[in-house]
Amino acid sequence: MKSSRIEVRITDEERDIDAAAAAAVGESLSEFFRAAARARAELILAENQRIVLDSDEADRFLAALDAADEQTVNGLSRLRQRRGVLPAE
Image (cartoon, rainbow, N blue to C red; front, top):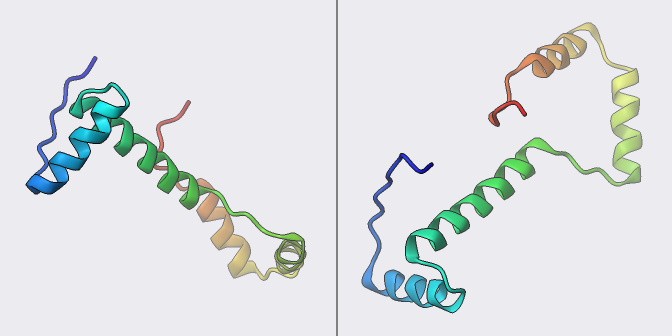
């Protein structure tokens, strides 16, 4: 159930292009904005919660973990305990 409202100020040109795109996919402007905002939010959150390493980078990362000093180990432990930005599933 939708219960929150957001107001956005846009130019007439932005409204025209957004309305044309929404009409092209058979959505209301509100549906179009919600879908676009959700897709961008998910992309940004995924990019900030996942690290992708190639083989060489992974080897260097694992070697650094193996050689980690106490300060690094404590820092990684604190990082693991941090609460994520997404709600728990």
